[in-house]
Image (cartoon, rainbow, N blue to C red; front, side):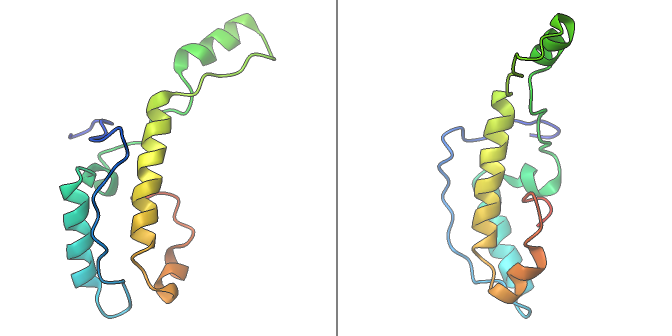
Length: 116
């Protein structure tokens, strides 16, 4: 999957085992468990930077709006963007649920699973 935005599962059905909750003393154990689950689900590109969020809107729809000068037309959202965001948010949610509150507070402003 190097350099691609391919997402292994379009059904958004993943199999994650709940790891030990990350606290200030068990990072290496937590990391091993989380990383193994992420790789097993084919999502490692989301945490290593290889999977880049696609453009939100389709280029053709933006160019068409610019050519037509129509202010009332709406941009067409990119289906790849929608799938990427759903997948990343599911992964991010799972990762956040594996942290204790005092650790969660330190990463609460992260926008993507890569930032975690």
